[in-house]
Image 1: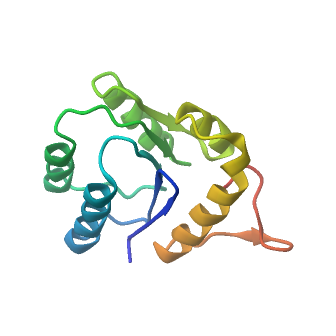
Image 2: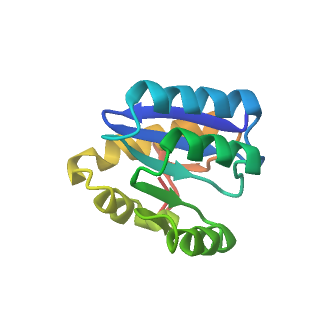
Length: 147
């Protein structure tokens, strides 16, 4: 699996693995977005490197149909964060964050601080499902700064 999806109330959680999502995985993501509704939901994506293909991005653009959807991308990759920052010049309400700034990403999405730990735990689970080796220290605690 290279893409895992979940949700926490009105926040759609996405974790990419190291590879681009398959078309079946992307279709499942689009189905969730369509079911929950484009408006009224927020998205947080963790990605070490994986990225939707051009055709997959087009399918999402068609579904969103120009509506402004708040989305935070959390990535340890400087390249991914720079790319998202450039995209944010053209896509309103899109912003990139390094792993140690998950709280900032949630505040950007206007998600209450009280949900941070719950969302961080879910993102860790999704990262494992997406095929990323998520280091754990002690009693299930992530490395410093990682969700």
